[in-house]
Length: 191
Image (tube, rainbow, N blue to C red; front, side, top):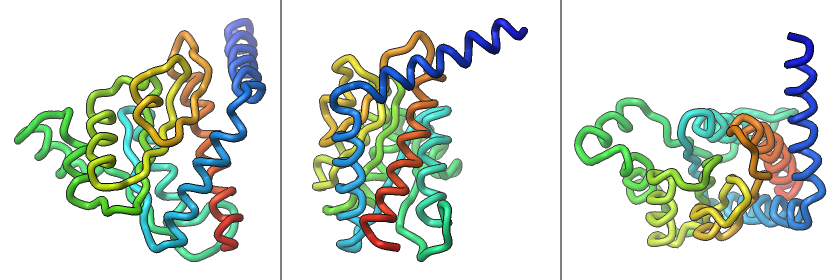
């Protein structure tokens, strides 16, 4: 058991090191934070989506903005696409591939931002949400993994974790990025 724990921790540290030392990491996070903060400053909102653990990260992002992060401040407009009644209705009436895109089409407005999260970068429903966002003039910030995946190619800004054998290491990077984004958004908005 101890050997497994040490291996897991070392693997996590190694993935984070590769991410931190990647040439475009800091610039892509800064660009993502700027797009999000500017959207909120103009009165827009941020929609977020993902599947499985990435949906949990999308929810975490939205609740930190609408609730609070480290200090009390005004609530910021962010919505995670995660309503179970809506999602099952849409999946049943259309397909699971449409659960995010129909929401973006109905609720998103030009000037908003979509935070699209997919560890693989190939989730059909996330990619369709990106396409719907583009049609409405919504900027897309993607959290995904390296390697020229479709999500990073379709996004305005992509923050890409290193490719890892399993998605858990990518998700660990994504939650770090989410916390940094929130801190940067708050600082830029001076809230």
